[in-house]
Amino acid sequence: MEVVERRIEVAVPVTPTRRDWPGLLDKLVRQVDDGRIYDRDLLDLSDALGAVFEAYHRRPHVRSSSIDY
Image (cartoon, rainbow, N blue to C red; front, top):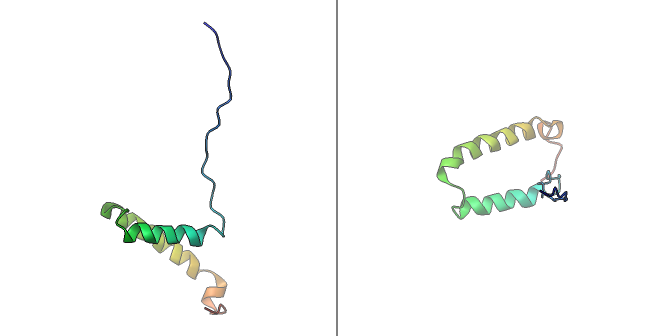
């Protein structure tokens, strides 16, 4: 028996940065619109998006309405 050592590279998902989120959310919108998200997963998605909105509204600039849209 011969023992061989070799290096294997495994792709690891990168944590999205602040600049990645608008594009990722746009892709999510398209997947929901196209029916690529199963109905059974929509409740969990709704819960996760609710948590995002809650975090967004806890930001001081949002509460003070100091941001212009």
